[in-house]
Length: 109
Image 1 (cartoon, rainbow, N blue to C red):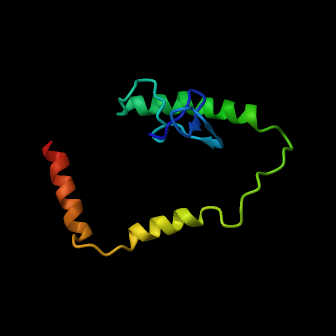
Image 2 (cartoon, rainbow, N blue to C red; image 1 turned 90 degrees about the vertical axis):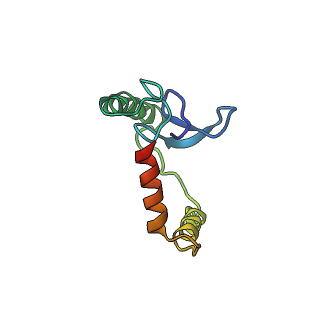
């Protein structure tokens, strides 16, 4: 999952630098009630516990009538370009063949 602290704030690196305004909970966040076990009811419990914490953290950080965050005009464009590069790349292995091989190996092991 996305590295987070217990308050669901996303952390940038090993020095625990917080990414301002970015939270992650549930399957996306790395914080978990049951460690690495993310199956069934554990996921629901994680979502309830850390979803509530994300709400509490948001309420703590964002005050009523605070101004909206200003984003650069090109915010997200580099990410979209990176995703498009992956999406439209032409390689020697057809996507369907790769998907099938991954599926068989995941079921096998």
